[in-house]
Amino acid sequence: MKPETLFTPDLSPAFNAPPPAFEQGIAKTLETLQKQKAAPVMKKKLSAALIAAIVLLVALMGVVYAMSLSPTADMFGLFYGEEKRQTLLAGDNALINQSITLGDIAYTVDELIYKDGVIYGTATIKPKEGANVILMSEQCSVFDPAGYNVHWGDDPAPAGTKSYAELALEQDAKIILAKLLPNDLKINGKILENGDLGYFPTVRPDNSIHYTFELHSATEYEGEGIPKAPAYQLEMHAANWEVTQEDVWLREEPNDTWLTKYDWLIDFTPEPSK
Image (tube, rainbow, N blue to C red; front, side, top):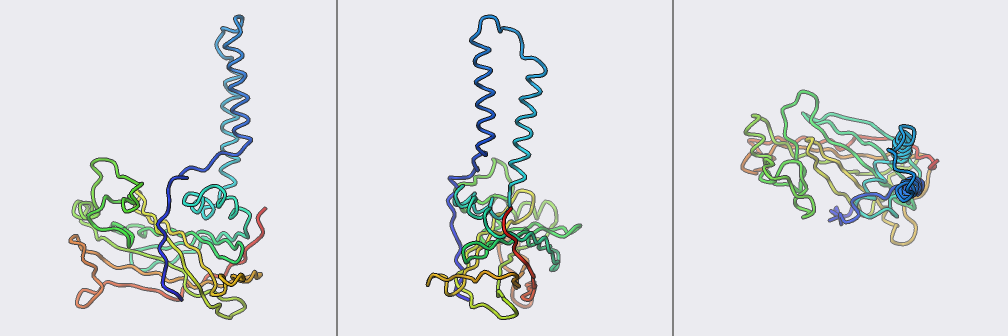
């Protein structure tokens, strides 16, 4: 596998645009309200029925919009814009929701998408239930505000946010750095020669990490990419280790806390987007 490529995303398109039907519905409602305001004989308060209709319109369109979401498409849309999101929504999708536990940390692969010769995916990392752990990603320092991606420059923490080290001291908790990456991809039991791997971890204020990644084949830049197949097997690599409140990684003896699992196998069958 080639060296990992860590993307530095552009967060300018941070919010996805609502569907056209939503905008049209709101526009029509506003037009109606403007007409009522302009007409001298329409000075009464909005009727309960009209208010209910407006509320229902917004609620229904919100539900319809939410139902179309894919965690992978949404995350790539967050970083690369609505066009990328729509492209992945049209890809072959496999909801995974498979988990393992490694020490005090639970790893879940949420979804995988095949689109145009590339495998895209999302995963979530959390402390296992009952574990007294402060979780951070490899891009963070223990002195950073916990749960915020300040290294991007576009995710400032609210004033007074405590650092990972401060939280660990306050809660008498361990600081654990955790990561999860795809390794080998197999088709019909045969390992496909991997190409570039792009990934970015996103820390969250709820003490979790969201991983987004894309896997290319070694032939991708020759115009082929990962072959489309009925089924795939993806090997994931999970790892975590403790970090001291002084920002020292405990990965060597006599204080080696490094835990790793290279052979987490996930079988998945992407299905065409509906």
